[in-house]
Length: 170
Image 1 (tube, rainbow, N blue to C red):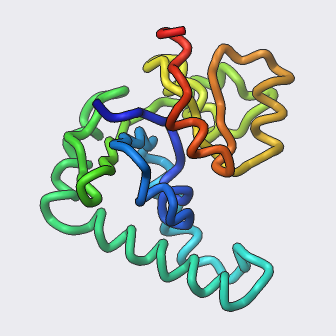
Image 2: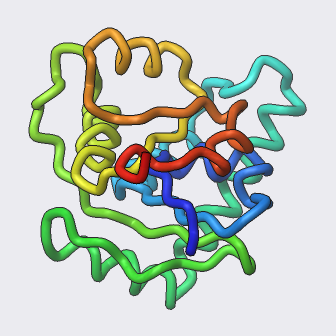
């Protein structure tokens, strides 16, 4: 059985360790975060301080976009877009990793503390009862401060998160 996490498409694109986990993993990715990849790719603003790192990240984002645009993967994603909260069939990345796209809907429930994509991450995590995986320390702090009923892991703690028991099994 694979360990599920809610995360953004850009996290999977730029953090290589997420595509080489020690055990099977499923990333649940809100569709709006896939759209965000196009914005990152075309933006003139650097994502990283180092120009070589920035170019590498944009290359990885381009590779992920191309993978999502392959006919079979595109068809899987389009299936999820027909109904709110529908999930796509799994999109495989090797033997250990699968991505499931979810048509999450921002209900502005957390609008005071979180932007629309962060809200979709929170709502998806709550709805499915699975933890969020992110590199955004500020987001983690706001989740804790707002006492949101979700579990969240920093990407630096990915190996620990893979070993951790889900909240509903503790």
